[in-house]
Length: 445
Ligand code: NAP
Image (tube, rainbow, N blue to C red):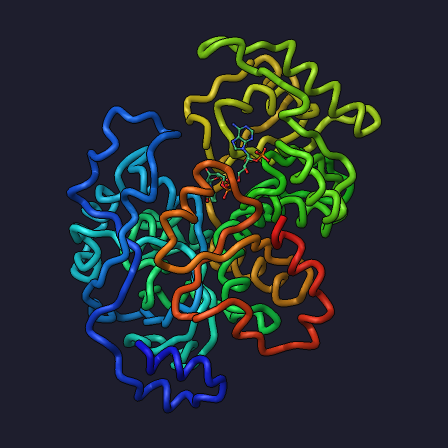
């Protein structure tokens, strides 16, 4: 692995040299183990500790199949799906691997007693499988996490609709929290040249998701002047939604949970900010009963900020805890676009507010290649910026996931894999200098 790392760090290794570099038979990766699936039985979600189940193992490198690329991973990032995988919630990911393994011979490779996790990477292509023409050894890349087979006509308008659509490193094996990763070549995108490895690795999953959920016509189709309520506005998804709202001429109403987080979103340019802790909203009077008076109080606080306007688009992901309020505060004809249910997936809302006011609930999930590519292009152009607050060593991935599980983090948490230290991999210093304040905004907050 040292030879691969050195070749990348040298910065001037040719494509031919990368193509002839020796590939090891095994590699180190962050895994969960199938025989530990029941380890947290009876433990409340919050107390399930990713540090207990995320292992750093040496695992065999599988054969590369047609349409795939083998990538040397310089850096990766923690996503909430790493947390879900590590606590085996809402289901164990080994069920995904078993089902995938039954679909065809190449997929069988994924059904193993261990699962190499990770849905983001920045690194360098080492090998490509048969049928890959667009990417070559030596290409510096990032990968989005949509894995599709595309053998069904159903996926050919929008690849998210492929019946065999999976999230790489969550519903498939050989993910990005490892020295080597296997991706489909249509997951690859150019690494933004002004970013370090860990900065480039961090936006992928959340940036693409926020783009589809808020900007794409498959999601919120946000337009100039829209008021956008953004839950967790300084978090993984939310900090990109905030940037998209500002970049697209909309008016974000950012919900956060501390003065520090409020300060971050203000520094990004958001003017309308609600601290939900300071507001003390109790949307649920108890575990089974919501309190519509609290929805109204929240709605009034929004109107006080917007000059009396209600919300055109709610960027939803907390789920059960907030969904009733989200439906209530949306304006007549507005949209609630949801991609998750962090606090619980059995939502409850008062449907009278929805149908009488012609509101729409839209489900959104990750992004198709085109959307992911557009989102990455905006990063490349310096119009949207990474939100990396901290980078951990691969050995400390458990702690990194723990931070995200406990909401102790800001923006994105990165993981250095083959990169020996932070700050390496920048190829365009002039562009970096131009955007350095935005790139560093989430650092050491
Ligand atoms: P994150 O970095 O933890 O950010 C989420 C933020 O939401 C938190 O920082 C918190 O911000 C806020 N929040 C959490 N619980 C809340 C609650 N009960 N009420 C109100 N606000 C709450 O996580 P993320 O990466 O943004 O992911 C968020 C969710 O989306 C996860 O469930 C994840 O699995 C899901 N997700 C889905 C997709 C998809 O494609 N479907 C893609 C990415 C993520 P404050 O404390 O500041 O309010």
